[in-house]
Image (tube, rainbow, N blue to C red; front, side, top):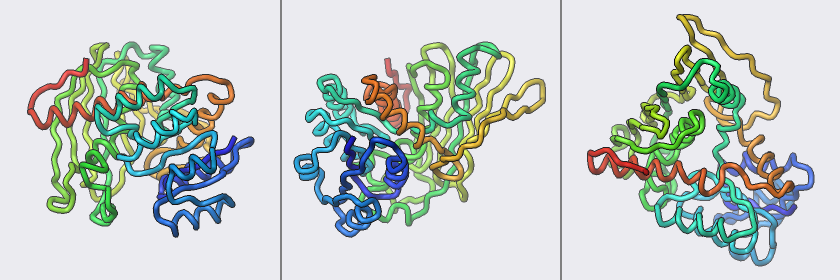
Length: 335
């Protein structure tokens, strides 16, 4: 299978590293509007460099593309490829507007190709272990959830032409960093959000970015579970993400890549296998490798990828509701 990676920035390195290790996958090309960056990446992976994705699609004719570009480009690139019957694996978020998400839904429905969203933290072993415990109701039903994302992003992070802008990034910490944890809350409890009450702030970089660096939200889900969600990039360090799932007889905690059971004042760490192919930030997430492998196995077996435009799009619907709630000061309903 011939594959092209569009966008040669930092996140593309995770994709390229995994693709290089896969059998029956050839990295045929890379694309970046910055010629030097495209050429350097192409040389490293012994493939052709392009500087325009439409030219690449018409000349290289890949079987699959990986979209690792700024957020505002995700929908037009994905829709163009899906209409040509090309498989698409897209970095999050898959869209940054209701209109964009609707276009993506229609493109997926009318395409023979697979579409996937990179919510790689679903594939972390600690998450899989906790998900299994929840689904088997070992400690009873889930009663509530709380999640914290406390990271650091300084002025230099926003020095390019798209981070920190509403038009191109679509928002701040909510849509960029915290969306993974927001997605995990819904995934772990197995229920969609029905409402959210939220507030966003820019406490750290006023006058430097036009988006939020902090978000607080209260989610209510179809199964009656409530979740408190707090995320910021105004902290002085990058701390491991923490999610507590409070069940009837114990609390299940995910902290970074570790998992714990807290019951009757005792803390037990779950034994997890050592990951030999860890790819990700040291403080959160090594799931790119298993996610990408699963995506290609789905293609090979002619199965839809589980985190498609509809499942992956739920996180888009949630963060758009967060912004609406913060603007109005009212609870916003998703259903």
